[in-house]
Length: 436
Picture 1 (cartoon, rainbow, N blue to C red):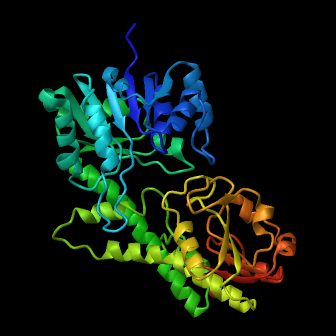
Picture 2 (cartoon, rainbow, N blue to C red; picture 1 turned 30 degrees about the horizontal axis):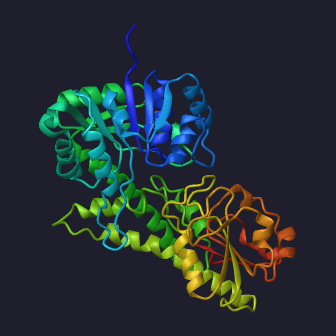
Picture 3 (spheres, rainbow, N blue to C red; picture 1 turned 135 degrees about the horizontal axis):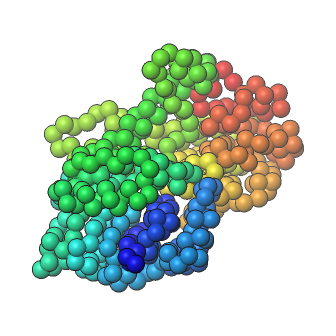
């Protein structure tokens, strides 16, 4: 009987955890590798270390651990027996310069390269600035591999396309882009991904794959910025941007996206900068401007809080503002690059006393998250919805208002119909809600 393929997944986050479970379900023997002992303990015991609703993922992990196909470790020596190594570590940008920061990637490559079994396939799923495979990844693996050089491994770039809340669905059902430098690596890469991907795997070169991934997220960012700019115009003109969107989209080939309190997540706020960073002569304008529009929206939320409090006869300084939602996406715990943070910082700068509620997201340094919604709203002067969690959409405002000191609701996600909120006795303000 032929031995199962041995796979190591480096990085047990929103990409690595579902990938490890899915590859194990294809019949491979999978080891998840991470420096975080908490994640390793969770996966090794069949528990999902990610909070929020991820349909099918908890059961998948339990099943694969029980079958003996999936385990996890902090020991990089697991790489020594791997036929396939998939790298899924974070690739952030520097907050000040917006340049790529590859510290985690380089650390992972050094650990992997020094331990690669001869003939192993290495796939980089991390999102990369164009040119990184050639200038960073391959040299780092060669250095770590020593005298064996790149003859010891095949290398492909297959950037992830997962989304929090839809991790397993996207992993299995979305087409993949696989960059390779030679036909042999391409064949091996396609064979590996077709174990579990039901859609097409499109083969191209490394740099094209890098451009595709960063461009698809920059495209989304630009489209969101357009929606946000229409929302700002609508506010000034006294119309409802969501009704504008609905009617715009009655025109064929129009698909205006939703405006809102800001853009978060691991990909959208930083991948446009990865793409722009590679353009030394083109000097892009549109993509950075769109980033600026989206980065402004949390500040606009703070302005709306101040406007709402003023209308209720309360100054923002010393007011208690309850921020509803810390995760960037509804139904998940994922707070990476959440717009809640700049919003909260701006409220504090204006002198507000901020309480944060989220049913899923964890507290972070400087951002204490309350789990009890009743306690979070009690005595508040303003409620500000940043994340459209179901718990907020279901709120009975006539009951909630009894707990408040002042009745102000600022809606960053179109969770409520403005006139309904006003009839419940609130001052209402919202992104794009010029006629509230």
